[in-house]
Length: 105
Image (tube, rainbow, N blue to C red):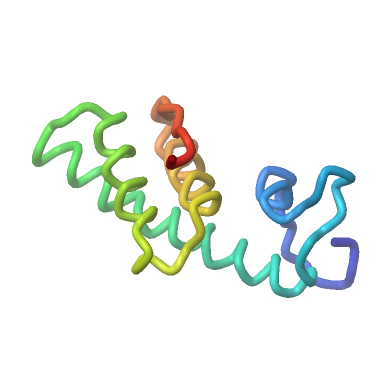
């Protein structure tokens, strides 16, 4: 994704759209747009997760699992790999341990 666009898409996100040879399976502009959406969503969820942690006081992993469950629904507008990436990024932003997510059967 080396063009004149200033947005750096991290390798962890590029991997969602790359084949075994690390070639993008989608146009670079489309991948960049999805990254921006997912990064923004992770950023917006920070405050919600902090509020849930303070008000309901469940463990951090439970909050992240709930967020993942919501993002994994068909209505969320993100793919399952994107949902995992968003919650992993959210955990990173919050400096919380991130639970492992398994692929649905």
